Structure formats: structure tokens, C-alpha cells
Length: 179
Image (cartoon, rainbow, N blue to C red):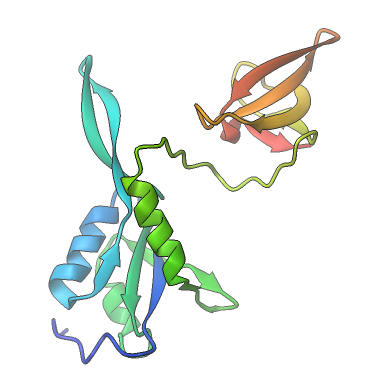
């Protein structure tokens, strides 16, 4: 396989999202930049983690498992994109690789530079007042209503029906499902 591409950039260039294996975002990004000269984006920011009792800054992608690649999809051999073991496939729409609007990629990059907290949540389209069921954790089996998402923690605030009372709590989104 050649390391040079025949004009990966043309007037028809667009952004495409690749799904990648967990924690392979940066290695896939560097691989495509260095080996194929493609423009890639992995919007990321520093987050604080505890390691051995100490707080350390770690760079974490805003969207786990995604790398954005800008290229003319017709000019790029798709076999080339799968030459890295971390690549799982394209994000697709109607069977073809989905074109990601340039302004969406730019917004993600701006969000990564923002000092405001950003939380990645699974896409769960819920509206205030919708019934929810707690499916895991210490409150598993409880039912209640979705109130809103906390702007400080990114957790779902729910009103749960327990012991003939309504109790309000914050739960991670993966512990809930619409009922």
C-alpha cells in the first residue's frame, strides 16, 4: 500500500466520522495524519482523574470512539482507512458514509477549547415529565419521572416514586430507560 494519496483534497471534500475502538482515537488520528496526510480532528480536553490518590490531568476526547476525517471520499481508497486495527467503520446514513457538516466539526473543536464543563451522554431523547424506570444501581426497579439534566453534573434529575413519596435524585443516564 502506498503512503501517498492521489489528491485527497478536492472541491468535494467533506468531513466523515469513523468509529474506532475504545481509547484508539489519538493513535488512529496520528496514523492518518502521518501516513496519508489526511486532515483529522479529535476534539479533546483535559479532565482531572485520580491516580494513586493524586489528581492528574488526562486528555480525553469529547466524543469517545470517534475520529473525524476530512477528505474526498471518492479519491480515498476506503481500504486505506481500515489499515489501522483500531478503525471499526464509518458512521453511515442510508448505507453510505455520512457527511458531517463542517460547522458541526468546528463547534466540537470550539467546545473542546471552552472552559465550561462538557458532558458526554448517551443520546436519550427524553422530555420533562416522561416516565422512567431505573434499570441498574441501588435504586433498580424504581419508577418515576424525568425532570431535567443537571447543568453542573450532566446527570439526569428524576423524581422517583418510593414508599408513596416522590424523592428527587440525580442518576447517570445509563441507569435509566424510558418507561
